[in-house]
Every structure is written in C-alpha cells, then in structure tokens.
Image (cartoon, rainbow, N blue to C red; front, side, top):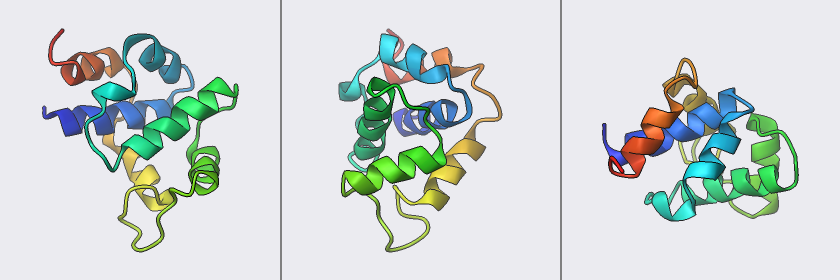
Length: 108
C-alpha cells in the first residue's frame, strides 16, 4: 500500500463512518498527508469536526466551496462531489482505519 492509497482510504473511512474522524484526529495531523491535492479536503474535514458538524459528501462539499477549494473543471478532479463519492467506494468498511493510519505514519 502506498502512502497515497492510505491517505485516500482514510478519507473514505471518514466519509462512511461518523466515528472515524475521532480516531484520525487522535492519531494523525495534517502533516502526515503529503498529497497536496488532498490537503484541502483533510483541512475541511478537520474544520467540520471542530465545528461539531457531521462529515458527509454534502457538508464536505459545502465546506470546500466556502474555503474556495471546490473544483469544477472535471468530475474527476479532487474536491468535486464525484471525487468524494469515489472516496467512499475505496473502502467497504472503516474497520481497517487503524491499519491505514499506521501505513500513513510509515509503520510507527
């Protein structure tokens, strides 16, 4: 598994499991996400969590729009609703979230 795979899987877990953000927040920070394109999504997720709001495709899209990070060039661009939907299909369950975090942290 590459670090990018781990990053994408973690984001997918957050979108399909409301408790996942707490595990992510307690174990990793933004600095672990190396993909420049994914950082705005992670920042928006952390922002929603800090506000006490649920994180789903709609709330995340709205936050990305507020942050000026919603991209509409192509449905495959990171930050579009279609891209966020695709994140949810990367992982069938959030059961492996801690494994993805460990992979992202480099086996720490």
